[in-house]
Length: 362
Image 1 (tube, one colour):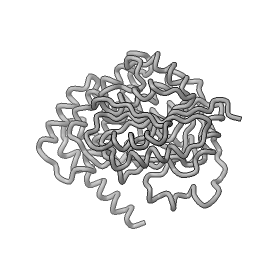
Image 2 (cartoon, helix red, strand yellow):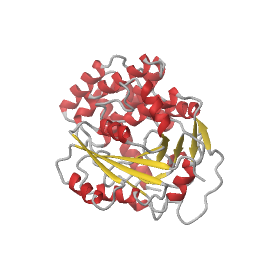
Image 3 (cartoon, one colour):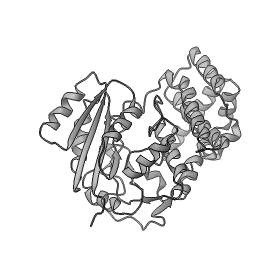
Image 4 (cartoon, helix red, strand yellow):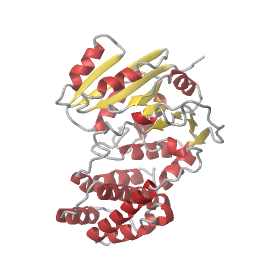
């Protein structure tokens, strides 16, 4: 029998008229004693609100909160403050939950852990072919981790401690359950003005939140479910395949949020450098993969952003896992840190194209 059986699902939504109904309806299939779905419309100018209101009219488990455009982090925090469930789940408006997940959710809520992670699939087309479907999985060697162990894995971007680790998203907040009491206690200690997420951060805010949460409660337990819960629908995502020039400049904001973690003693300086270095690498790889032409303005964008960082990471700060097999990204990162942006771009572009060619042969 479930001890804590009420669930609040928070869905931040911006310009989500094409996918929001799918996301909500997938959540409404969860069978628990008490379910509430909180949609926070983040200043959408399309018909997102109208579509949510039409669902609210016939299902009172759904609540709509309107706010001016403030970003996903703020929307999630607004939804969390309105939530009443024993457990919290975050779902992005362009994704959805997979069918028949009620039993797995109920088991997770009764696991005795503070966080429960579920496997996910990358896109709708994978649902019929993913190996979770149509057969039994091999027995898992690890079914739970301590917060401390997961924190170290997140900082090193190395999740070899978890079997089938590529089928979990450790740095996200979706495809998992959080105990509400845990998040409430964290918010009181948060370095971001009692918010769960750093406001104004436009990328990888989930990673900062998870690292901070795991740092505050190192003795907590994370359970690993075998049942896939979530579809991260890359085909519908409005941000995954887009390079925004402003993201380079916003590395400075990201650095400031990391410094707040350091000041609050959630991270050491070296750990903070590692997190920032990994994000620089991530944004650089996105920049290379999503731009086929190197415009002269990119040189200044990167030079200005790196120069504005309070702490500029060294090559030794980059986790081995983010440098790729055989640390293949090292030459590109060295050129990047030396301000040779164009050379770094073309070198990484050549590596990327070579990797695509090799993978196409198999």
